[in-house]
Length: 384
Image 1: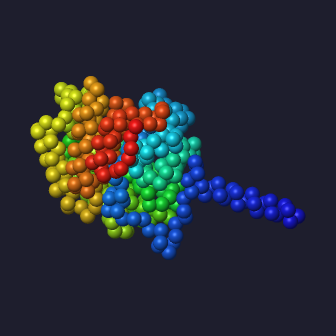
Image 2: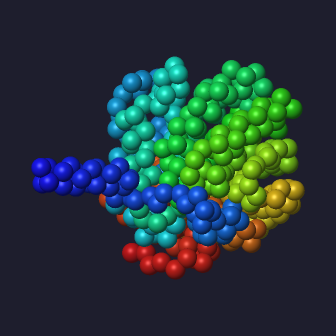
Image 3: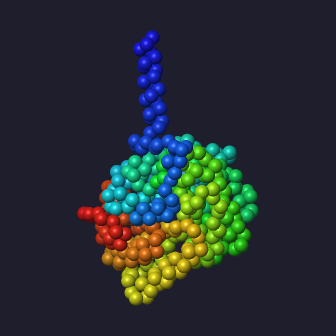
């Protein structure tokens, strides 16, 4: 009888240990209600994130042809392999200390807003890869917004979908409540209005976005554990600077200094993109190029001063073309230098022709560009 009781106790202990540990060995520490587990401030987090990397076109992949497919089909649908811990380790070894994990939740929750368990498990597994390597991780809602998204920057859309949006975030917050300060949640990616307008937002778009942002903050803060003080990232309309940044409305929060503003930048478009409305160029570094970047950062820094919150550039980068790694490295080096001067953290968008990491072989694919980024960020690392 005693042996039976001991066996039961040991079995329970092992089971609880497995539950406490995330997949791949990440072991989150339960929140300490005495306050000793309060997360670092948003200012400290942005300062500590030297340079980040996006797991692009992976868990954010979507499409009607994928509906009800298993998680791995979504994850690989846009041309990338299944994510592995070795892959994320290669990102860390390259010098990046933060990973933004874009996730599209559409197709993965039912009519009641309940997230599919298999999908949720896979998202958690990838987050655990990042967290187990002691890296910062930003988890978001991605193509749930944008030109094909169900979430739009309008008061009418919020009235229709605000409760579902909150339901998704309630589940995310609960699933990750014991994950510490290096896990950061991001409200929504590149939200657009009902007309998919990428230019300056209308008053209704500003109000609609504000409703979603406030609901996001309120929902996370109503959660348990680290969610009470977790740092939260809030994106401007379309992820833009300029008027979108000036018109952004900061939400109310129950704690001070735990909000971060996010914008994106792919300028100049004729250099950073292979295809755009401008004539493509493989070259960057002229006096005009430098002056344009100087003006962008000066304007963005000036507009950001109205907010009592730090800022990150959650996506940036350039596509490779005509074997132009030297120009891409020059552009990247100067971009990071200007961002550092402004106190902005930056996250390279990585997939396809943007990719700096060879994900199949878990190694750096463009060492000259990575080295330029890390040198400007003040990160010491050796590249092959």
